[in-house]
Length: 119
Image 1 (cartoon, rainbow, N blue to C red):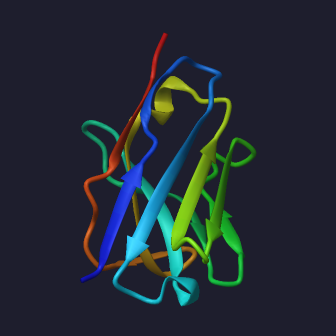
Image 2: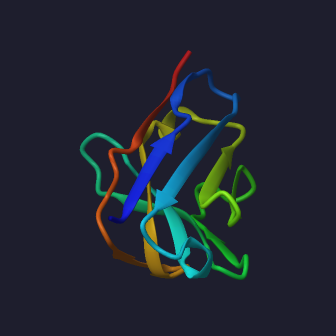
Protein backbone atom coordinates (compact mmCIF):
# COMPACT_ATOMS: atom_id res chain seq x y z
CA UNK A 1 0.00 0.00 0.00
CA UNK A 2 1.41 3.34 -1.07
CA UNK A 3 1.72 5.75 1.81
CA UNK A 4 3.39 9.07 2.58
CA UNK A 5 3.50 10.53 6.08
CA UNK A 6 4.51 14.15 6.56
CA UNK A 7 5.86 15.53 9.82
CA UNK A 8 7.86 18.42 11.25
CA UNK A 9 5.41 21.27 10.99
CA UNK A 10 4.64 23.68 13.78
CA UNK A 11 4.44 27.29 14.87
CA UNK A 12 7.51 29.41 14.17
CA UNK A 13 8.26 33.12 14.27
CA UNK A 14 9.05 35.06 11.10
CA UNK A 15 12.67 34.53 10.17
CA UNK A 16 12.74 31.12 11.80
CA UNK A 17 13.39 27.67 10.37
CA UNK A 18 11.68 24.30 10.17
CA UNK A 19 12.57 20.99 8.57
CA UNK A 20 9.75 18.89 7.21
CA UNK A 21 10.07 15.16 6.64
CA UNK A 22 8.08 12.80 4.46
CA UNK A 23 8.40 9.07 5.02
CA UNK A 24 7.29 7.03 2.02
CA UNK A 25 6.41 3.36 1.68
CA UNK A 26 4.74 0.96 -0.70
CA UNK A 27 6.69 1.90 -3.81
CA UNK A 28 10.27 2.05 -5.08
CA UNK A 29 11.11 5.42 -3.59
CA UNK A 30 14.61 5.75 -5.03
CA UNK A 31 13.45 5.92 -8.64
CA UNK A 32 10.59 8.38 -8.12
CA UNK A 33 10.47 12.14 -8.38
CA UNK A 34 9.07 13.57 -5.16
CA UNK A 35 7.63 16.97 -4.42
CA UNK A 36 6.34 19.21 -1.69
CA UNK A 37 3.10 21.12 -2.21
CA UNK A 38 1.39 23.56 0.10
CA UNK A 39 -2.13 24.89 0.47
CA UNK A 40 -2.95 28.06 2.33
CA UNK A 41 -6.51 28.85 3.46
CA UNK A 42 -8.63 29.93 0.54
CA UNK A 43 -5.88 29.25 -2.01
CA UNK A 44 -5.09 26.50 -4.48
CA UNK A 45 -2.49 23.90 -3.72
CA UNK A 46 0.85 24.90 -5.22
CA UNK A 47 4.13 23.17 -5.96
CA UNK A 48 6.84 24.37 -3.62
CA UNK A 49 9.80 22.14 -4.47
CA UNK A 50 10.59 18.89 -6.25
CA UNK A 51 13.52 16.52 -6.55
CA UNK A 52 14.19 13.80 -9.11
CA UNK A 53 15.74 10.44 -8.46
CA UNK A 54 19.02 11.88 -9.69
CA UNK A 55 18.87 14.88 -7.38
CA UNK A 56 17.78 17.56 -9.85
CA UNK A 57 15.56 20.10 -8.15
CA UNK A 58 12.94 22.71 -8.93
CA UNK A 59 11.63 25.46 -6.67
CA UNK A 60 8.78 27.91 -6.74
CA UNK A 61 10.06 31.45 -7.20
CA UNK A 62 8.59 32.44 -3.85
CA UNK A 63 10.87 30.04 -1.94
CA UNK A 64 14.09 30.08 -3.99
CA UNK A 65 17.08 30.77 -1.80
CA UNK A 66 15.12 30.00 1.38
CA UNK A 67 13.95 26.39 1.02
CA UNK A 68 15.99 23.31 0.20
CA UNK A 69 14.60 19.94 -0.81
CA UNK A 70 16.65 16.79 -0.29
CA UNK A 71 16.16 13.06 -0.11
CA UNK A 72 17.62 10.04 1.65
CA UNK A 73 16.90 6.97 -0.45
CA UNK A 74 18.19 4.65 2.27
CA UNK A 75 15.46 5.97 4.56
CA UNK A 76 12.76 6.42 1.88
CA UNK A 77 12.43 9.99 3.10
CA UNK A 78 12.28 13.40 1.46
CA UNK A 79 12.97 16.58 3.41
CA UNK A 80 12.17 20.25 3.07
CA UNK A 81 14.46 22.60 4.95
CA UNK A 82 12.72 25.95 5.31
CA UNK A 83 14.71 28.99 6.40
CA UNK A 84 13.85 32.68 6.69
CA UNK A 85 10.21 31.79 7.02
CA UNK A 86 7.58 34.42 6.26
CA UNK A 87 3.94 34.70 7.32
CA UNK A 88 2.95 33.95 3.72
CA UNK A 89 4.58 30.52 4.05
CA UNK A 90 1.77 29.55 6.41
CA UNK A 91 0.01 26.54 4.90
CA UNK A 92 -0.51 22.83 5.11
CA UNK A 93 2.45 21.13 3.44
CA UNK A 94 2.08 17.84 1.58
CA UNK A 95 4.53 15.53 -0.12
CA UNK A 96 3.64 13.38 -3.11
CA UNK A 97 5.04 11.52 -6.07
CA UNK A 98 5.37 13.45 -9.31
CA UNK A 99 5.83 12.55 -12.96
CA UNK A 100 8.46 15.29 -13.31
CA UNK A 101 10.12 17.96 -11.18
CA UNK A 102 7.72 20.49 -12.68
CA UNK A 103 4.59 18.73 -11.49
CA UNK A 104 2.33 15.94 -12.55
CA UNK A 105 0.88 14.64 -9.32
CA UNK A 106 0.02 11.00 -9.05
CA UNK A 107 -0.98 8.91 -6.11
CA UNK A 108 -2.91 9.86 -3.02
CA UNK A 109 -2.25 12.85 -0.80
CA UNK A 110 -1.16 12.31 2.78
CA UNK A 111 -2.60 14.15 5.76
CA UNK A 112 -0.08 16.97 5.43
CA UNK A 113 1.67 18.93 8.15
CA UNK A 114 0.66 22.40 9.27
CA UNK A 115 3.21 25.20 9.17
CA UNK A 116 2.26 28.46 10.84
CA UNK A 117 4.56 31.47 10.68
CA UNK A 118 3.46 34.11 13.13
CA UNK A 119 4.80 36.36 15.84
